[in-house]
Image (tube, rainbow, N blue to C red; front, side):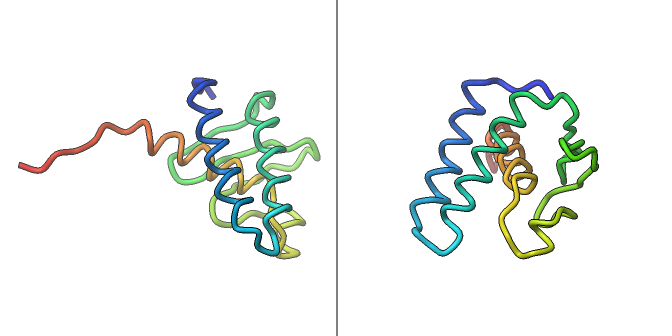
Length: 104
């Protein structure tokens, strides 16, 4: 994927701040998932966003399709996963790139 690093860093920081500021039960786990997502988004060449979900060839040699759900063990065990974090980050990145529409 071809993403602007400065813009990506802004989206990642916003996601991290939102996830960890709640202090909720999973806040720390989401923080870890977002950190791993950042590392993967910056280094994994096998990512594709189809407009709805992020397709990921993971370090485990599994292919995941992540959006609000995932097929990984963490998701199955009701835990935050970096695949979903990465998918949300990429979706937010692209959503913020869209030009504003104006009504006439």
